[in-house]
Length: 381
View 1 (tube, rainbow, N blue to C red):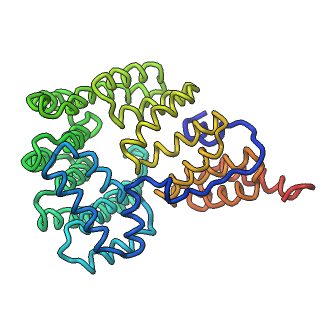
View 2 (view 1 turned 180 degrees about the horizontal axis):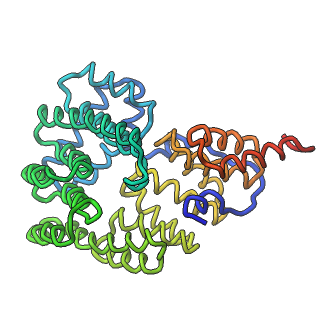
View 3 (view 1 turned 60 degrees about the vertical axis):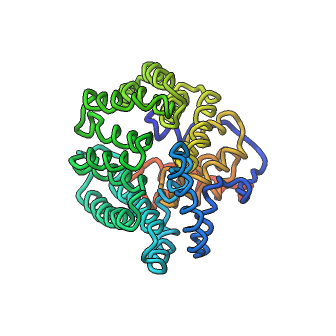
């Protein structure tokens, strides 16, 4: 069974109703900016983000708070596209507006591309990715023109450049470090762009890690970088379905600091070997540090399900769907959760929606047929 099917199909029986409402008090604090955006309260959302940026410039060690504040826009949610456009139109000199929209468009580029290897990615996907990446670069560059202190803009430009050959990543890193020599975020984006799978090398990555060591006394979190190569070796084992060996390297990476990426990869591997409590612990650490990361909510929902915590399973999968409403796999995952407690009408609704988004998925059609047969039988609703 492949990983996707395991995410979707595993589960235990449950009975009763589940409350799936996510109250405002349960939302990550960063989501307040999204609420303001959707209300078209552009002055307030800009004021909020600018204040976080100013705190960061005075104290570079608050970098992760800054990153979380902007990462909330890194979502393939079509419901925020129009408000972002309106924000730029209403405040054409506002760097925060361009940066937020540039981050959103970066995510749309990756979403259009899909997650398969390049050899399995078609021309339409590549074209869609390029379209959104070009728009994202325009926004991110405009944001820098309006406010040269935006290290976040350089980070997302590195992310795009990684897919375009990586020729500009070194200069982008240099510019970000000119603003904040202690930046962990900028170095992390650069190291990711220099992974061997993206045309870089461990030797090149190691040079960047060594160069950062002079700053450890000022910002000890930079030691997290020491685990980046071990984590990538773990990824190679994970890709080849050798989770025990991958776990060994992810734990080795975590010895250098408690970082969201290492916890995410370890959590997914622990789930694969049926250690659901361990997976939930690591994925919760991801969400605390990077609250807008959809994959962590999705995977934690599956761990909650296996631990028979169904309220939280549905809460997490609903939030993952909010982040990316047109991701068929996440919608289908919720459908399979509904199936566990015989909410067959809700399950059927989700699986039909997933099939509409991904008509080539035979598994969706199979379960739709089974659900339709159950709903036609006596005693079902």
